[in-house]
Length: 264
Image (tube, rainbow, N blue to C red):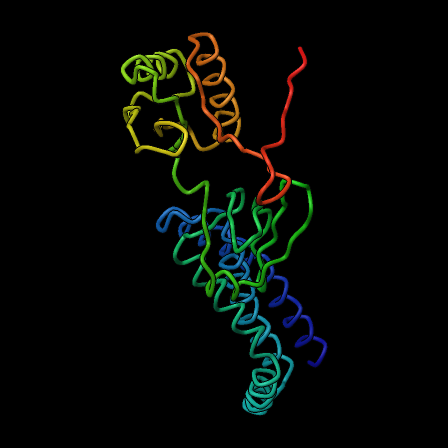
């Protein structure tokens, strides 16, 4: 009879392993579809271990263990562990809040404090990042809850503001036409929202111009670099002057300005 109980207990555990995998997979797919959560690792593991735990309890009962005694001991142990691992529990709960909000998913590019990187894993205790320098960074979930986080991948498009200064002698209408024509011929610039060129004020050396354009988030860094290069080339071609501050050098308070001679 005793061996029969052990066999039944083993069957309970094997069944639990199988059902836990199936139920966690199905429930995780449902949660991801309903709440727009991607790669919800924590949800999957909670469901998996929850279902498996039920079958383990059934197996222990089949083997003759007194569940009341076990539950009492588990309660005492859980209280002791809870006091000893407040930070750990806080990180687990913070991870559930993050997933519930849908604030971050695997594959997103985020910034937390001074750290920027791609999310490569969301675990019980922490989020793992790969930085642009290909470094591994582990951020506790509690840090993301208590800090300002910027998600660069949350929306499909991003705005790029290019601040330029042109000399006071330049025709602002001509400058605006050059910039808008450049944007029009740039495939990475989106037509909607509409690009804009605005006069942003009068600077010390010239008139401040701001070019506002939109691009897809995944292409943003390459787009930003190419736009700076193309605007500089377009201004050089049209002979639009980009002013810069001039500095006078003195050797002392009462001395004459230092003579600078330019040799061609």
